[in-house]
Image (tube, rainbow, N blue to C red; front, side):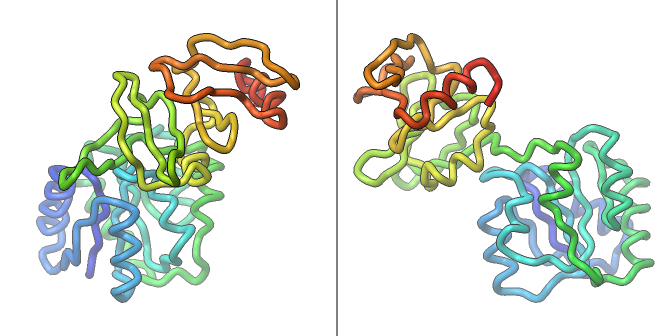
Length: 252
């Protein structure tokens, strides 16, 4: 059995590998990957494994994003900490689901289930539809940012707002630091929780917690004072102003 592990916590990935080999000594761990990007690179260069163990939340976003870019036809065991009610729904759809911390007996049962079934799905599952049906929070929790040759992890909870400047996207954190991010604002709109972030114009996505003051402005627009302060004027565009006002009160 050729197994691919996609898990962004190194200790958890190593522990999972040891558990698998303890249960199935003949198993071959092909790789331990930690991001959507590395998973897509791997799938583009290798044949389909017999099994994928996949954490829903990865360092660069929700792992369901992988299914938007590649078709996975092997069984998948999801590994994450999430509502117990989701378990039956995943099993009905011919995949398995293990809650962390993973118990050896539950992993053994999942591996046995995989071994007893055809390793190729007759019809690929619609994982995006499945995630919505389960109300799985697939929004990003962390971002990787580059600072020279070093890499830093930024929690979304630390972000005050995102904006573009000279065709580069930046995040301003609540402690007044600025970092470049490898996403366009369009992509960030998909990755960020819309309950907490709103794109007010072509240049900026603001976090609800970053709004300090708001003022009426010409043409039914809204002028915003942010915390931490921005280096440019922050005005909600005319076409977005009605939606912005609904978003403020949770109607959008």
